Length: 385
Image (cartoon, rainbow, N blue to C red; front, side):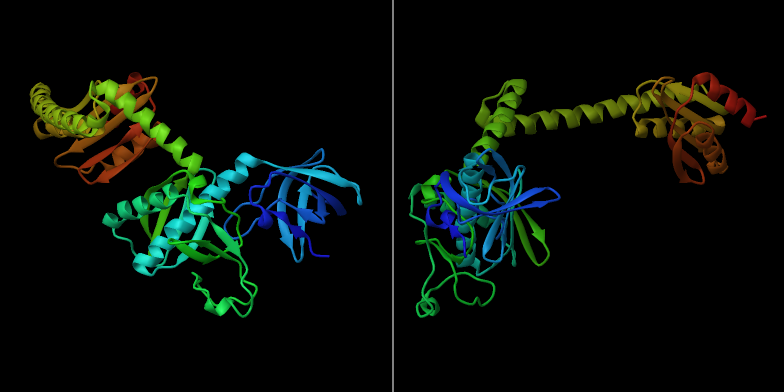
Protein backbone atom coordinates (compact mmCIF):
# COMPACT_ATOMS: atom_id res chain seq x y z
CA UNK A 1 0.00 0.00 0.00
CA UNK A 2 1.38 3.39 -0.99
CA UNK A 3 1.74 5.84 1.87
CA UNK A 4 -0.33 8.99 1.79
CA UNK A 5 2.02 11.98 1.51
CA UNK A 6 0.40 14.62 3.65
CA UNK A 7 3.29 17.04 3.14
CA UNK A 8 2.22 17.40 -0.49
CA UNK A 9 -1.42 17.92 0.43
CA UNK A 10 -0.61 20.67 2.93
CA UNK A 11 2.97 21.87 3.33
CA UNK A 12 1.94 23.87 6.43
CA UNK A 13 0.66 20.81 8.30
CA UNK A 14 2.49 20.55 11.62
CA UNK A 15 0.66 17.72 13.38
CA UNK A 16 -1.17 14.61 12.13
CA UNK A 17 -2.36 11.14 13.18
CA UNK A 18 -1.58 7.91 11.33
CA UNK A 19 -1.52 4.14 11.75
CA UNK A 20 1.74 2.25 12.21
CA UNK A 21 1.96 -0.41 9.46
CA UNK A 22 5.49 -1.68 10.17
CA UNK A 23 8.24 -1.35 12.77
CA UNK A 24 11.59 -3.03 12.16
CA UNK A 25 14.70 -2.83 14.36
CA UNK A 26 17.95 -1.61 12.78
CA UNK A 27 21.44 -0.72 13.93
CA UNK A 28 20.50 2.90 14.65
CA UNK A 29 17.03 2.35 16.12
CA UNK A 30 13.71 1.35 14.53
CA UNK A 31 12.38 1.96 11.03
CA UNK A 32 8.69 2.84 11.29
CA UNK A 33 6.30 2.91 8.33
CA UNK A 34 2.93 4.68 8.48
CA UNK A 35 -0.16 4.68 6.28
CA UNK A 36 0.17 8.49 6.05
CA UNK A 37 2.85 11.01 7.00
CA UNK A 38 3.60 14.72 7.04
CA UNK A 39 7.33 14.01 7.52
CA UNK A 40 9.15 14.99 4.33
CA UNK A 41 11.87 12.48 3.39
CA UNK A 42 15.30 13.65 2.29
CA UNK A 43 15.40 14.41 -1.42
CA UNK A 44 15.85 17.02 -4.13
CA UNK A 45 18.56 18.85 -2.19
CA UNK A 46 16.25 19.31 0.80
CA UNK A 47 16.92 17.66 4.16
CA UNK A 48 14.30 15.50 5.81
CA UNK A 49 11.95 16.57 8.58
CA UNK A 50 12.62 15.72 12.21
CA UNK A 51 10.22 15.62 15.14
CA UNK A 52 8.25 13.05 17.13
CA UNK A 53 5.98 10.06 16.52
CA UNK A 54 4.17 9.41 19.78
CA UNK A 55 6.90 9.39 22.42
CA UNK A 56 9.60 8.40 19.90
CA UNK A 57 12.02 10.88 18.38
CA UNK A 58 12.23 10.86 14.58
CA UNK A 59 15.96 10.94 13.71
CA UNK A 60 15.83 10.52 9.92
CA UNK A 61 13.24 10.06 7.15
CA UNK A 62 13.96 8.30 3.84
CA UNK A 63 11.78 7.27 0.92
CA UNK A 64 12.13 3.56 0.06
CA UNK A 65 10.06 2.58 -2.96
CA UNK A 66 6.42 3.34 -2.21
CA UNK A 67 7.06 3.59 1.54
CA UNK A 68 8.57 6.27 3.76
CA UNK A 69 10.78 4.98 6.56
CA UNK A 70 10.96 7.00 9.76
CA UNK A 71 14.07 6.21 11.82
CA UNK A 72 12.92 6.36 15.46
CA UNK A 73 14.74 5.90 18.75
CA UNK A 74 11.88 3.78 20.18
CA UNK A 75 9.66 1.03 18.74
CA UNK A 76 6.01 1.73 17.94
CA UNK A 77 3.32 -0.97 18.04
CA UNK A 78 2.11 -2.12 14.63
CA UNK A 79 -1.57 -1.27 14.22
CA UNK A 80 -1.48 1.53 16.78
CA UNK A 81 -2.51 5.11 16.03
CA UNK A 82 0.21 7.67 16.67
CA UNK A 83 0.40 11.44 16.57
CA UNK A 84 3.20 12.91 14.52
CA UNK A 85 4.59 16.34 15.37
CA UNK A 86 6.94 18.08 12.93
CA UNK A 87 9.90 20.12 14.17
CA UNK A 88 8.26 23.17 12.65
CA UNK A 89 11.07 25.68 13.05
CA UNK A 90 13.35 23.35 11.07
CA UNK A 91 10.71 22.56 8.42
CA UNK A 92 9.70 26.18 7.88
CA UNK A 93 13.34 27.19 7.56
CA UNK A 94 13.93 24.53 4.89
CA UNK A 95 10.79 25.60 3.00
CA UNK A 96 11.91 29.23 3.06
CA UNK A 97 15.33 28.28 1.64
CA UNK A 98 13.87 26.01 -1.05
CA UNK A 99 11.19 28.45 -2.20
CA UNK A 100 13.73 31.30 -2.28
CA UNK A 101 16.06 29.18 -4.39
CA UNK A 102 13.24 28.57 -6.89
CA UNK A 103 12.67 32.28 -7.35
CA UNK A 104 16.35 33.08 -7.88
CA UNK A 105 16.91 30.07 -10.15
CA UNK A 106 13.89 31.06 -12.21
CA UNK A 107 15.18 34.60 -12.60
CA UNK A 108 18.67 33.38 -13.58
CA UNK A 109 17.14 31.01 -16.13
CA UNK A 110 15.01 33.77 -17.64
CA UNK A 111 17.89 36.26 -17.87
CA UNK A 112 20.77 33.97 -18.87
CA UNK A 113 19.21 30.62 -19.82
CA UNK A 114 21.33 28.79 -17.23
CA UNK A 115 20.26 25.65 -15.37
CA UNK A 116 20.47 25.03 -11.66
CA UNK A 117 22.89 22.07 -11.62
CA UNK A 118 23.47 21.83 -7.86
CA UNK A 119 21.50 22.66 -4.75
CA UNK A 120 22.35 22.08 -1.10
CA UNK A 121 20.85 23.55 2.05
CA UNK A 122 23.54 23.54 4.73
CA UNK A 123 23.23 24.37 8.41
CA UNK A 124 24.03 28.05 7.86
CA UNK A 125 23.88 28.87 4.15
CA UNK A 126 22.42 27.47 0.95
CA UNK A 127 24.58 26.72 -2.08
CA UNK A 128 23.16 26.94 -5.60
CA UNK A 129 25.24 26.03 -8.66
CA UNK A 130 24.59 27.31 -12.18
CA UNK A 131 26.14 26.10 -15.44
CA UNK A 132 27.25 29.52 -16.67
CA UNK A 133 28.89 32.75 -15.47
CA UNK A 134 26.87 35.48 -13.79
CA UNK A 135 28.40 38.99 -13.99
CA UNK A 136 28.93 40.65 -10.62
CA UNK A 137 26.89 43.67 -11.70
CA UNK A 138 23.85 41.43 -12.32
CA UNK A 139 23.66 40.07 -8.77
CA UNK A 140 22.16 43.22 -7.26
CA UNK A 141 19.38 43.29 -9.87
CA UNK A 142 18.66 39.57 -9.43
CA UNK A 143 18.43 39.96 -5.66
CA UNK A 144 16.13 42.98 -5.99
CA UNK A 145 13.82 41.11 -8.38
CA UNK A 146 13.77 38.07 -6.07
CA UNK A 147 12.72 40.19 -3.10
CA UNK A 148 10.10 41.93 -5.22
CA UNK A 149 8.59 38.49 -5.75
CA UNK A 150 8.53 38.06 -1.96
CA UNK A 151 6.77 41.40 -1.42
CA UNK A 152 4.16 40.56 -4.06
CA UNK A 153 3.17 37.54 -1.94
CA UNK A 154 2.54 35.34 -4.98
CA UNK A 155 0.80 31.97 -4.28
CA UNK A 156 3.10 28.98 -4.89
CA UNK A 157 1.23 26.36 -6.90
CA UNK A 158 2.36 22.71 -6.74
CA UNK A 159 0.62 20.19 -9.03
CA UNK A 160 1.03 17.07 -11.16
CA UNK A 161 -0.26 17.62 -14.72
CA UNK A 162 -2.01 14.78 -16.50
CA UNK A 163 0.01 12.80 -19.07
CA UNK A 164 -1.83 14.68 -21.81
CA UNK A 165 -1.26 18.12 -20.25
CA UNK A 166 2.40 17.66 -19.30
CA UNK A 167 3.87 18.30 -22.80
CA UNK A 168 2.10 21.67 -22.86
CA UNK A 169 3.52 22.81 -19.50
CA UNK A 170 6.65 24.94 -19.66
CA UNK A 171 9.01 24.21 -16.79
CA UNK A 172 12.70 24.18 -15.93
CA UNK A 173 14.41 20.79 -16.06
CA UNK A 174 17.90 19.61 -16.95
CA UNK A 175 16.62 16.47 -18.68
CA UNK A 176 13.43 14.93 -20.03
CA UNK A 177 11.31 13.45 -17.22
CA UNK A 178 8.77 10.63 -17.46
CA UNK A 179 5.28 11.16 -16.10
CA UNK A 180 4.30 11.80 -13.31
CA UNK A 181 6.13 15.10 -12.97
CA UNK A 182 5.42 17.41 -10.03
CA UNK A 183 5.54 21.07 -11.02
CA UNK A 184 6.23 23.93 -8.61
CA UNK A 185 4.94 27.13 -10.17
CA UNK A 186 5.53 30.70 -8.97
CA UNK A 187 3.57 32.78 -11.50
CA UNK A 188 5.74 35.37 -13.19
CA UNK A 189 8.96 34.02 -11.71
CA UNK A 190 9.44 30.29 -12.08
CA UNK A 191 8.04 26.93 -13.13
CA UNK A 192 10.14 23.93 -12.25
CA UNK A 193 9.98 20.17 -11.82
CA UNK A 194 10.54 19.59 -8.09
CA UNK A 195 9.71 17.04 -5.41
CA UNK A 196 10.38 19.32 -2.43
CA UNK A 197 8.09 21.20 -0.07
CA UNK A 198 7.73 24.97 -0.15
CA UNK A 199 5.97 27.83 1.55
CA UNK A 200 2.38 28.46 0.49
CA UNK A 201 3.17 31.95 -0.76
CA UNK A 202 6.31 33.89 -1.64
CA UNK A 203 5.57 36.32 1.21
CA UNK A 204 6.29 33.55 3.71
CA UNK A 205 9.89 33.46 2.48
CA UNK A 206 10.39 36.81 4.19
CA UNK A 207 13.71 37.87 2.68
CA UNK A 208 16.28 36.68 0.11
CA UNK A 209 19.95 37.63 0.40
CA UNK A 210 22.84 36.63 -1.89
CA UNK A 211 26.06 36.33 0.13
CA UNK A 212 28.64 35.40 -2.51
CA UNK A 213 29.17 34.31 -6.10
CA UNK A 214 32.34 32.41 -7.06
CA UNK A 215 33.51 30.52 -10.13
CA UNK A 216 32.64 26.83 -9.90
CA UNK A 217 33.50 24.37 -12.69
CA UNK A 218 32.14 25.94 -15.90
CA UNK A 219 29.70 28.19 -14.06
CA UNK A 220 29.25 29.75 -10.64
CA UNK A 221 28.23 28.84 -7.12
CA UNK A 222 26.00 31.23 -5.21
CA UNK A 223 25.78 31.26 -1.43
CA UNK A 224 22.48 32.65 -0.21
CA UNK A 225 20.14 32.75 2.76
CA UNK A 226 16.39 33.22 3.00
CA UNK A 227 13.80 33.95 5.64
CA UNK A 228 14.89 33.82 9.27
CA UNK A 229 18.40 32.84 8.20
CA UNK A 230 18.66 36.06 6.21
CA UNK A 231 17.27 38.06 9.13
CA UNK A 232 19.71 36.46 11.59
CA UNK A 233 22.62 37.02 9.19
CA UNK A 234 21.79 40.70 8.69
CA UNK A 235 21.38 41.17 12.45
CA UNK A 236 24.92 39.83 12.96
CA UNK A 237 26.25 42.10 10.23
CA UNK A 238 24.38 45.05 11.73
CA UNK A 239 25.91 44.39 15.15
CA UNK A 240 29.40 44.13 13.63
CA UNK A 241 28.89 47.44 11.82
CA UNK A 242 27.59 49.04 15.02
CA UNK A 243 30.75 48.00 16.87
CA UNK A 244 32.97 49.30 14.06
CA UNK A 245 31.08 52.61 14.07
CA UNK A 246 31.64 52.98 17.82
CA UNK A 247 35.36 52.16 17.54
CA UNK A 248 35.84 54.69 14.72
CA UNK A 249 33.46 57.31 16.15
CA UNK A 250 31.54 57.26 12.89
CA UNK A 251 27.90 57.02 11.88
CA UNK A 252 26.86 53.53 10.82
CA UNK A 253 26.18 54.46 7.15
CA UNK A 254 29.68 56.01 7.00
CA UNK A 255 31.84 53.17 8.39
CA UNK A 256 33.34 52.25 5.00
CA UNK A 257 34.73 55.75 4.50
CA UNK A 258 35.94 55.82 8.11
CA UNK A 259 37.76 52.52 7.58
CA UNK A 260 39.36 53.85 4.37
CA UNK A 261 40.70 56.89 6.21
CA UNK A 262 41.98 54.74 9.06
CA UNK A 263 43.69 52.39 6.60
CA UNK A 264 45.35 55.34 4.86
CA UNK A 265 46.56 56.70 8.20
CA UNK A 266 47.88 53.27 9.17
CA UNK A 267 49.73 52.95 5.85
CA UNK A 268 51.35 56.37 6.41
CA UNK A 269 52.37 55.38 9.94
CA UNK A 270 53.88 52.12 8.67
CA UNK A 271 56.02 54.07 6.19
CA UNK A 272 57.09 56.48 8.91
CA UNK A 273 57.91 53.64 11.31
CA UNK A 274 59.85 51.81 8.61
CA UNK A 275 61.97 54.93 8.06
CA UNK A 276 62.76 55.24 11.77
CA UNK A 277 63.40 51.49 12.00
CA UNK A 278 65.88 51.63 9.13
CA UNK A 279 67.78 54.46 10.85
CA UNK A 280 67.77 52.49 14.11
CA UNK A 281 69.10 49.38 12.38
CA UNK A 282 71.91 51.40 10.79
CA UNK A 283 72.87 52.82 14.20
CA UNK A 284 72.90 49.35 15.78
CA UNK A 285 74.96 47.97 12.90
CA UNK A 286 77.58 50.77 13.31
CA UNK A 287 78.34 49.41 16.78
CA UNK A 288 79.39 46.09 15.24
CA UNK A 289 81.56 47.45 12.44
CA UNK A 290 84.50 45.12 11.64
CA UNK A 291 83.83 42.97 14.74
CA UNK A 292 83.36 39.66 12.89
CA UNK A 293 80.67 37.18 13.92
CA UNK A 294 77.82 38.88 15.83
CA UNK A 295 75.04 37.51 18.04
CA UNK A 296 72.38 40.16 18.66
CA UNK A 297 69.05 40.04 20.54
CA UNK A 298 66.29 42.58 19.81
CA UNK A 299 62.77 43.05 21.15
CA UNK A 300 59.43 42.97 19.33
CA UNK A 301 60.68 42.75 15.76
CA UNK A 302 58.62 41.35 12.93
CA UNK A 303 60.14 38.56 10.84
CA UNK A 304 60.99 41.13 8.15
CA UNK A 305 62.52 43.39 10.83
CA UNK A 306 64.72 40.53 12.06
CA UNK A 307 65.93 39.97 8.50
CA UNK A 308 66.55 43.67 7.82
CA UNK A 309 68.55 44.13 11.03
CA UNK A 310 70.63 41.02 10.29
CA UNK A 311 71.29 42.35 6.79
CA UNK A 312 72.37 45.75 8.13
CA UNK A 313 74.77 44.18 10.64
CA UNK A 314 76.16 41.68 8.11
CA UNK A 315 76.95 44.55 5.73
CA UNK A 316 79.49 46.03 8.18
CA UNK A 317 80.57 43.37 10.70
CA UNK A 318 82.80 41.33 8.42
CA UNK A 319 81.36 37.99 9.57
CA UNK A 320 78.03 36.28 10.23
CA UNK A 321 75.21 38.30 11.76
CA UNK A 322 72.82 36.23 13.90
CA UNK A 323 69.78 38.24 15.04
CA UNK A 324 67.07 36.94 17.40
CA UNK A 325 63.80 38.51 18.54
CA UNK A 326 61.50 36.97 21.15
CA UNK A 327 61.68 35.54 24.66
CA UNK A 328 63.03 32.47 26.39
CA UNK A 329 59.45 31.48 27.29
CA UNK A 330 57.80 31.96 23.87
CA UNK A 331 60.75 31.25 21.57
CA UNK A 332 62.62 33.32 19.02
CA UNK A 333 62.40 34.41 15.41
CA UNK A 334 65.88 34.39 13.96
CA UNK A 335 67.92 35.26 10.89
CA UNK A 336 71.53 34.44 9.94
CA UNK A 337 73.23 36.46 7.18
CA UNK A 338 76.79 36.42 5.90
CA UNK A 339 77.91 38.41 2.87
CA UNK A 340 80.75 36.09 1.87
CA UNK A 341 79.87 32.61 3.21
CA UNK A 342 77.08 30.00 3.11
CA UNK A 343 75.16 29.87 6.42
CA UNK A 344 72.75 27.07 5.47
CA UNK A 345 74.74 24.40 7.36
CA UNK A 346 74.92 26.61 10.46
CA UNK A 347 71.18 27.40 10.26
CA UNK A 348 70.25 23.75 9.83
CA UNK A 349 72.34 22.75 12.84
CA UNK A 350 70.78 25.57 14.88
CA UNK A 351 67.16 24.62 14.15
CA UNK A 352 67.93 20.93 14.70
CA UNK A 353 69.49 21.66 18.09
CA UNK A 354 66.54 23.73 19.35
CA UNK A 355 63.44 22.15 17.80
CA UNK A 356 63.16 24.89 15.18
CA UNK A 357 62.42 25.25 11.53
CA UNK A 358 63.68 27.45 8.76
CA UNK A 359 65.34 27.77 5.40
CA UNK A 360 66.84 30.17 2.94
CA UNK A 361 69.47 30.69 0.29
CA UNK A 362 73.30 30.41 0.54
CA UNK A 363 73.94 33.76 2.23
CA UNK A 364 70.94 33.82 4.56
CA UNK A 365 68.90 31.51 6.76
CA UNK A 366 65.67 32.53 8.52
CA UNK A 367 63.31 30.67 10.84
CA UNK A 368 62.19 30.19 14.44
CA UNK A 369 63.19 28.03 17.40
CA UNK A 370 62.70 27.39 21.13
CA UNK A 371 65.75 28.10 23.29
CA UNK A 372 67.09 30.37 26.01
CA UNK A 373 69.58 33.17 25.46
CA UNK A 374 72.12 31.22 27.49
CA UNK A 375 71.72 28.17 25.24
CA UNK A 376 72.08 30.29 22.11
CA UNK A 377 75.22 32.03 23.40
CA UNK A 378 76.77 28.60 24.09
CA UNK A 379 75.74 27.24 20.68
CA UNK A 380 77.42 30.09 18.81
CA UNK A 381 80.47 30.05 21.08
CA UNK A 382 80.94 26.38 20.21
CA UNK A 383 80.18 26.95 16.52
CA UNK A 384 82.78 29.70 16.14
CA UNK A 385 85.65 27.89 17.93
